[in-house]
Amino acid sequence: MLVATMRNHLVELVLLLLPVAITTAVAAVAAAAASKPNGNINLNSTLTAQENSSYWLSPSGDFAFGFIPLPSNPFLFLLAVYYANLSSSPTIIWIPFRNQTFSLNSSVVLTADGQLSLRDPSGAEVWNPSVQNAAYAAMLDSGNFVLASSDGTYLWESFSSPVDTILPTQSLLPDSKLIAKLADDDFNEGRFEIIMQGDGGLYFYSIAVPTGFLYSQYWDTNTNISNSRLFFNSTGRIDVVSATGEVISTLTTAVTKSTADFYHRGTIDPDGVFRHYVHQKPSTDGTAGEWKVMDFKPADICRALMTNVGSGVCGFNSYCGYDYSGMVACQCPEGYSWVDPKRTYKGCKPDFAMPSCNDGAQNVGFKMVAVSNLDFPLDDYDQFNPMNEDDCAQLCLNDCFCVASISDGVGNCWKKKFPLSNGVKGAYVRRTAFLKVGKNDTLPSYPPTAS
Ligand SMILES: *[C@@H]1O[C@H](CO)[C@@H](O)[C@H](O)[C@H]1NC(C)=O
Ligand SMILES: *[C@@H]1O[C@H](CO)[C@@H](O)[C@H](O)[C@H]1NC(C)=O
Ligand SMILES: *[C@@H]1O[C@H](CO)[C@@H](O)[C@H](O)[C@H]1NC(C)=O
Ligand SMILES: *[C@@H]1O[C@H](CO)[C@@H](O)[C@H](O)[C@H]1NC(C)=O
Ligand SMILES: *[C@@H]1O[C@H](CO)[C@@H](O)[C@H](O)[C@H]1NC(C)=O
Ligand SMILES: *[C@@H]1O[C@H](CO)[C@@H](O)[C@H](O)[C@H]1NC(C)=O
Ligand SMILES: *[C@@H]1O[C@H](CO)[C@@H](O)[C@H](O)[C@H]1NC(C)=O
Ligand SMILES: *[C@@H]1O[C@H](CO)[C@@H](O)[C@H](O)[C@H]1NC(C)=O
Image (cartoon, rainbow, N blue to C red; front, side, top):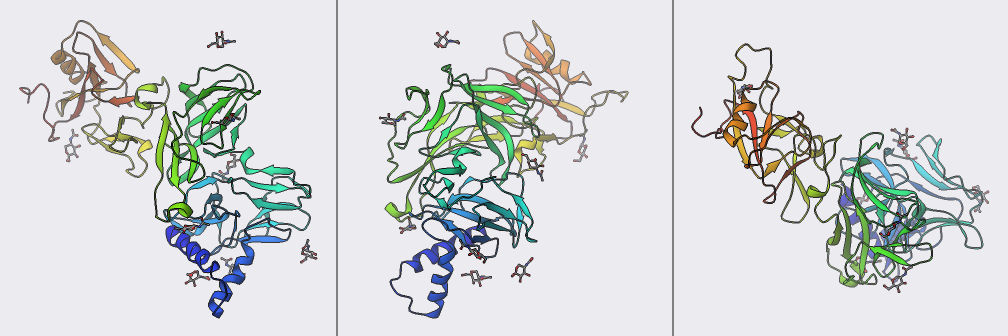
């Protein structure tokens, strides 16, 4: 539905390019265009959340501000700044409310006295950026949506309160942050944030949902010149820049795609990785195109993030790895499956009844399976040395508290607390995990001779 709506916008744009309205149908479209000007938005202008909502377009046609329907429900809308001319589903840059959707007939009014007022279907105001006497609003070609006074001074701008994305010419100012979405289709505050601290360091943190409590830092620029900011240069570089304009640190290697021909954006993604994306501009290409990753930080979040509290990069009982396209791919270990396959951050549940210490014959219903190169760092409740792999597995099988043990193959054995956290799998993980699963599971048991 969302994609269909965007295609409708495209159709309208193409029709607008026709020199003369030759049919009444085209005339009707042209009349509708009055509500989506390619320039300043005058006082007394209104956008209404509808089946085919109107929107305010930037002069180039690259960006729009308006209501867009949720993919899951065409009668609920997000108010957003988004790329207006991408044929793929819209990429949202900014929204005033992460946790709220708006029903049909909600509206945004630029009032006669120069206020921007977001209203529910009954006309009651639900938000206002507290600006009086704006002379006009404007959706700029930079992606910045502004309220301006008659002399052109910006009284308010969306660039001042970024959500999860920054664009060329935009800064992340000292003591401000970007917070990832919870999931690709969920704008609620997610599990990761980037803070540009007043002391000059740019820090990445995993955070609690809800409340935003800081769990663990997993990347930083190692910079300390106070009042620095993160700056997305119009040339496409993303740098930490001092108050005097000196580049202190860079998050981009080399800019190989010009900002003239490509859209650029920097986004802290729901998986905790900050990615510098580029997309060929439709006006220079004409093909559908797609977002491509130019650069990203940290280099390997699976290794960079370990946390004492919280689940780590992936959800509880899940482990971190990379997929073929370089995106973080969380997986469930043997004997476990997703709590919610569409929301993998919720973690994995055991496919067996958990061991109980109340059963007389403990652990008769269980066996151990061995998984190479898998570890759940931190959160040990016991450690043994020296101990070989077989004994490490057997010790966990015989312990009604134990769901997993880890062996490093050179004498160390750790028993792990449930739920498992910080899961990581990869050739560089020189550990073997022994997972306790139900005996009737078809997985081969460890050691192989045990039944
Ligand atoms: C706004 O609309 C009101 C009522 O419709 C009208 O009286 C007023 O002149 C308009 N103001 C502007 C600036 O267009
Ligand atoms: C919305 O646009 C589509 C396609 O242009 C059209 O078929 C439909 O009637 C429109 N709906 C409304 C309520 O205008
Ligand atoms: C949305 O978040 C804001 C603060 O971020 C909070 O004040 C408000 O109560 C939240 N609304 C809902 C519906 O959760
Ligand atoms: C929305 O507004 C239209 C036109 O004013 C009206 O016909 C319709 O009943 C309204 N829908 C809802 C759900 O309020
Ligand atoms: C800032 O960083 C520099 C170089 O990394 C270091 O020498 C200096 O001690 C740091 N200053 C403070 C106040 O941390
Ligand atoms: C932006 O980048 C250009 C060249 O890459 C550089 O000359 C300029 O100083 C940069 N601007 C800032 C504010 O860092
Ligand atoms: C929108 O995209 C089409 C190709 O999909 C392109 O021909 C057109 O020039 C673009 N319009 C703008 C305003 O960039
Ligand atoms: C064995 O399998 C059955 C059904 O597949 C399941 O209900 C039961 O919990 C399993 N036993 C254990 C100990 O997990």
